[in-house]
Image (cartoon, rainbow over all chains, first blue to last red; front, side):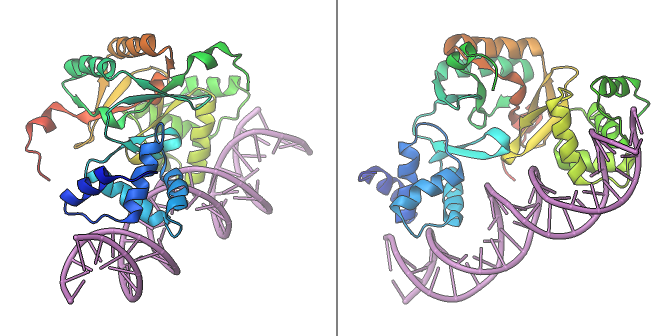
Length: 144
Length: 144
DNA sequence: GTTAGTGCAAACCATTTGCAGAACG
DNA sequence: CGTTCTGCAAATGGTTTGCACTAAC
């Protein structure tokens, strides 16, 4: 969590106020390797802003989403997850060990492009998080 | 909701009891075109079993899932959805009008196959529900 | 008759909302 | 200073759990 003139100016140019809470939440998302749940964002951002409340986290995440700062996706057990939007990469989450792996955007686009052509739909790429078994966990015995 | 000797025998062979509630919920899922939320399952199954409770629906869906009768997937706004497992087809849900369209399994397999090859993962096809805009809604003005 | 399954009520947890005070510009 | 944003507290809604009763076998 270092200084962040980029975020300051981005928020400012939107006519929005630059608050410690928004900066802290942006920092948390920037430093996270993959997706974070609202609860995880709250736990980490509270370290930077002690008086922070979950309410503010939810409102800020929704604010950041509507302004294009973060992407939202559906994750396990039907809960929401957020990630910074600066680079649009896709994730594969391992169902067993939880590890997240980035997917080449080009491949994902190509895969969905075929499905779009077949169906006529415009597929909403951002809202999909793929999950499966990573190579390591495939090699391990299926027990546990 | 007709007679269902298939479900009776399937349940029976597992050593599980054949109850009106389980049969009703299986009928509801069988007659549904796509995914259903627990709440939707409850509303429909209650018509067949008046005294049914949401509790039983949740427990039964979890029971059916662990025994391979239904698939579970993450849907919009981070909620759960279920569908009968007998035929593995994939769905595309329109974000605006909610219409569900079946996708040719072969195409989906091919799309994911590429991603699996690139990543080394085994992708869990069943837990993904794709969403986007259907052709009709794409043609309509973006307002509202 | 046993045991699994259900209904009821209450608990639980993530998320949302109303409102008054604090902070940004 | 005016407006936006936040904190607090309470409400909400979907989901889970404990326990006693019912029903399947």
